[in-house]
Image (tube, rainbow, N blue to C red; front, side):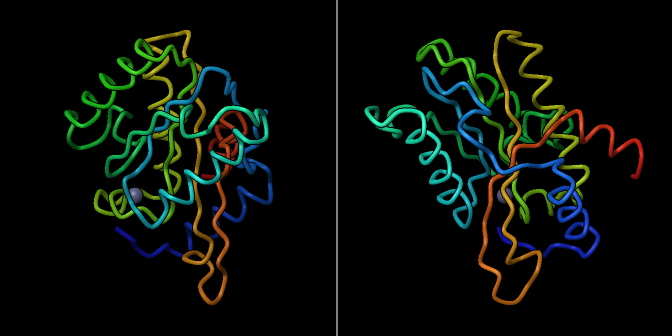
Length: 190
Ligand SMILES: [Zn+2]
């Protein structure tokens, strides 16, 4: 599912990182009490790394609860983008929404983490740029909150910098997308 990152997209990601429009996710960014529903792309190249980042956050807030017990993980190609309401096949999103809602009821989980990642093969298939992907992840958040206003939703962006910068860069990072800052940048520059 890997694909290449365009120069324009790589430049945008660096600008977002350097301008703190995306920030490395911290335990304090989410209410992790009661667990976390995670919606991620199934891409095995990144999914394990995403999961490890989240496990680390749970260790930061609580050392006596196993992180594996607290993470309710859904993985389908495209991850959180499927729920945006603009994915070409709306059925994927409907299925995910049903499962998210069911998990909330069954487990009493209040927080949902929506992942997208760069580069994502599924996003590449529908030719969504990084800007489009961030917009659609925010749409997905709004859609979940529309269905259940009490749900806290965090938008996360996983970046494989090696595939953005080329060469020997092996960094992979998980960022929290700062919605208001993104919307301001989008109006101003894009
Ligand atoms: Zn993907």
